[in-house]
Amino acid sequence: NSNATHDRTSLHFSSLFDRLFQFQTLKHTSHLTEMYSCIPQHISLHFHFSTTSPNSMIFASRDFRIRAVSSTQNQASRYIPAAPIFLPEGPWKQIPGGVTAAEGFKAAGIYGGLRAAGEKPDLALVTCDVDAISAGSFTTNVVAAAPVLYCKRMLDISNTARAVLTNAGQANAATGEAGYHDTIECVESLAKLLGVKPEEILVESTGVIGERIKKGALLNSLPLLVNSLTSSDEGADSAAVAMTTTDLVSKSVAIESLVGRTKVRVGGMAKGSGMIHPNMATMLGVVTTDAGVTSDVWRKMVRIAVNRSFNQITVDGDTSTNDTVIALASGLSGLSRISSLDSDEAIQLQACLDAVMQGLAKSIAWDGEGATCLIEVIVTGANSEAEAAKIARSVASSSLVKAAIYGRDPNWGRIAAAAGYSGVAFNQNVLRVELGDILLMDGGEPKSFDRGAASSYMRKAGETHGTVRIQISVGNGPGHGQAWGCDLSYDYVKINAEYTS
Image (cartoon, rainbow, N blue to C red; front, side):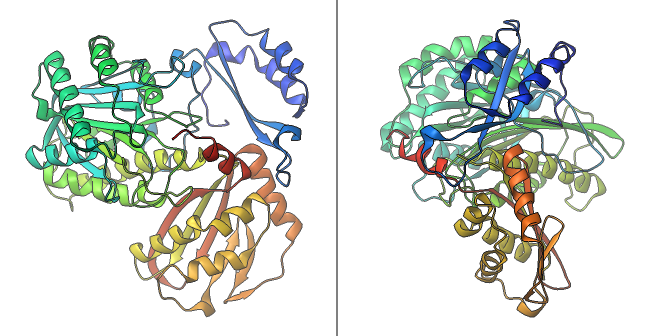
C-alpha cells in the first residue's frame, strides 16, 4: 500500500520485501516459509493475493500473485490488516486514532465468544466522556434487525448518546420480540457498568440473519470490554477489527482540520464486504467528532454525508437487514456550537464529515468479496447532484459492467446502457465515456481507441488491487456525482456459496 506509513521497525525488512516480490507468481509455499521465518514474532506480516488467471474457474490450479505486503506491530492487525486509506483531497491532514482521535472518545474490541470459531475480536465498544450529540442512518430494508429498530426508537427519544456497542457473529435479525428483548437486556447490563442511562447506549449487530445474539457470552464479556476501554490508537484499531465479518481488512480513518479558527477532529470505523448496495450497504459504521454542533444541524449533516458516501457504494445489489451508521459529536474541541447549516463553519465541518465517510465507503467497496479492484464512477454535466449520483450508482451497480472490468474488457456499450437505464433523462447525443485517460465514447458515438491499452489499464488495476476510474459526462449541467463499486469475480460466487446459513 503506497499510502501506508510504516514504523521504523518495518523499514528494516524492505530488502526482504524486495526478495519476496521477485516471486511474482507463487507456486510453492516454501518461498513464503523461507521469507516468513526471518520475521520477529512481534511483527505481523500480511500478504494480499490476487489471481493471475481470471479466465479459469479451476481454483485449485490457478496461480496467485502478491498484490500487497504490509507489516505492523499493531496487535489488533494480527487478525486482519488495515485497509488502504482513500481520503479525498482537502485542507485536512490524516491522523492516527480512528474513532478515538476526537477529544472525549474511548474504544475497545475484545473476543467475547460470539464468533463461530477462532479468537478474532467480536465485541466493540465506543464511548464518550460527555453526552454526545447523536445521529443515525439505517437500512431501508423492511426486514430490519432488532438493533436497528432499537436505535431508531432511542434516537426518537433522545438527541444524545454515550456509547455504541457492536457485536459480530449474529445479526439478531428476523428474531422477533425475543431478539429485541435480548438487545434491551444487553444494553441495560452495559449501562450499569458504564454508569449511564440505557437510552444513552446505541447498538449495532452483524452476522448470520435469523440468529439471536449469544446473550450469555456477550453479558459475561461486558466487564472485560468496559475495562479495556482506552483513548489510544490501539483501542480504535481493536474496535475496528471486532466489527468485521467476511471483511479481509479493517476500516478506520481520522482527520484533523480547521473549522473556523478551531482545530477539529473527525474519525470513524466501518465494516462491510458483501451485501453492499446503495441505500445503504451491508455495513456498520461509527463516526466521531469533537466539533460543537446542534442536534438538528448534526442530523442534517450526517444525512448529507451518508448520501454522498455509504449510499453510493455497491458490491452485489443486496441491501442488508442491519445497515447502521451512528455519528457522535462531543463538542470538546472548543468550537462554538454550529447552529446553521449555511454557516462557513458548517460547510467546513460538512466537508470533513464527507471526507471521512467517503474514505470508509471506498474502503468497503475496495474490500468487496472476491474483488480484484475498486471501481470509481464519476458523473458530470447532470442537472443536479442527485441526478449525477443516480447515474453513477446505476453504472457502479451494473453486473455486466463489473464483470467486463474483471474480464479486462473495455465494453463501453455496457457503461452507456447502465447510464441510460438509470432513470435520469439526458441527451444521448452528448454522452461521453472515458476509462482512465482513454476516451471510449463521445457525442453519443464510439471512438477509435487502443483496446490493448484499455485492457492493460484494467489488468494493472486488478493485479495491484488498484482503481479503475470511469468518467461520464451527460451534458453541461452543474450536477456532479460519484459512486464506488468493485469488479465481479468467480470468487464472489465461491465465497457466498460457502457462507453459512
